[in-house]
Length: 389
Image (cartoon, rainbow, N blue to C red; front, side, top):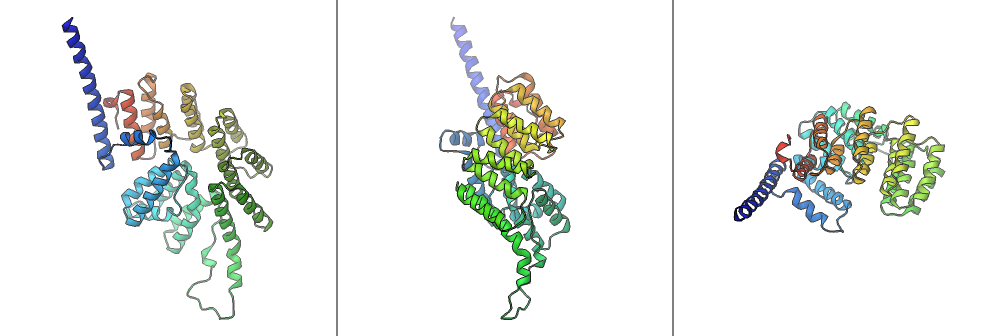
């Protein structure tokens, strides 16, 4: 009897020791990768312990840290924060010019910078808000034609109008005292007012002032300014941020009648339905997109994938991954992070293998957020030693 008790105690302490070794190894790996001592696991537990720690706090934290690192010229830190921004829903105002400068100083060619911008905006649509300012800054800075044209192409794809700064009056040109440069001002007045209105609508939405957003939208329409999907999308987003789904549905219906719907419109409504727990309505929007000839992107699928993981629908989760592949949309870092959240020690034996296979197939490099998610998943599944990173 005594021998059995001693043996049981020995096995217990052996298991505890193995768990301690696994945790220490995971924290050590992360510290080497990130270059700091504090492991992300402890931070997440601390943040998750308080009900007053919403996702918006992480967005604010990243935004403030980004501004500090940009001002300090810490390009590597900026690049790491840039990778974190991809998984968020918002973006710090005016960060894109600084991020592009940091990427260039790190030796990235124009083609790679453009690819970084495009992939980031696919993950975090809020980053697109800074494209106009970025394009104007690049033009004034006489940056490479490849970089400028690449940014302009991304902006155009998102329905944005970029004023031609070459037509603006030169600050060095002498102007008669009693003569106002009427012609030059008129040429840029329309796009300038348009972009200002877009900015105001977005600002009203963030402040949850729907009346202000609607008034700005209607004033813009009455001014005779040509309307575009991006303007309608701004008001649609403001309706949802203000929690008025009835008005969002009505506005969405009007956009459909005017043929102003694009992928951004559908993704905006799809997110709103999923956050309200209306998964069937969200999936109906995906089918409607396909029927209208609008291909769903990674943002669309990642939102649906996150809902499947949240509902613990394993079969639906992997079926959606297969649908992504059939549609020609490669799972990205956000997709893999979502799948990693679903892994536990009770997961199906093939889930870890399939998730790791997707990680290897990713075209983009693994960032520190995804690396941390892999380590945490390995600890949860008790398979840390089998993870090949």
